[in-house]
Length: 367
Image 1: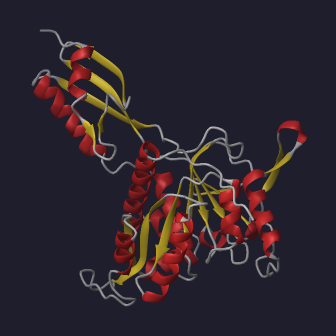
Image 2 (image 1 turned 90 degrees about the vertical axis):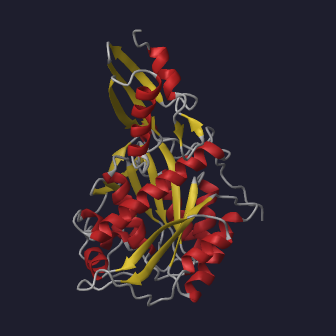
Image 3 (image 1 turned 60 degrees about the vertical axis):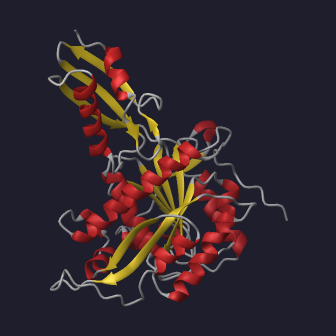
């Protein structure tokens, strides 16, 4: 019996997307089915280029064809991606951005900017289009992390004669920070409304273009900046960064609960435990829990969200950030692998969120 396209689609209807709990055909993830004798090829459209289950899905497809169609078929599975979006269609800001991810901590000094920078680079390395807003107006760290302290953005004229800021680009990431607009040694002494106005400009007056993910590196606390963000942007989800120690967990808990307040209602994608343990270079198998143990896991368990990753306390992570070359750029570093796994976990949670939860709406906070 000759193999038909219908045979292929029927077999693939038994291959489940593990995160979404439905088969590939029902999810419209199979395209371009080609049959030439015993040569079979088709394309599987993943929900993110950073999908950690890519090989599992590919192998399941091949196994389904061999089991249900022809054990001698030559199967070619082309894997590509089309990032999903959880945004409501009526949003007028950042219309080319599919997903907006807030990275928050509650407490300062837990390495949130380090995590955000490396996460952005890892997502970009997977093939995604990524942007990053440094929303910490009073203590911008992103210019240092990316080695762009002396870079100044240019301007471009858009529709109706309006001028837009062109974001700085480095390592494949589009960047915007108050640090690009003020001298590095000058303090920004502004009241809350002025800081909020600056964030609004980063959102509405910057030429972001088409992006799969826009990360927002938030300042510590729960302040005007956070409220402005959710009032201006339909935020896809929030990532909470903490260290294991009790004082950091206490503040991270407040940051997490802020997103879960009924009037805000932004999905929490999960928790990142930074500085989870110390491993000396000369003893790579040893772990020393300097800041405590399992604080991030306990926080995640309490609020029923996943632990997205545990980042070790490694000297090279600090050194690479200070040098403006985040550790994820070093493919031979074990710490680089940690951030790549983190990017896969975040992308995975975004895909699940977009498939299972209602579209994100801009928050209307009444006085």
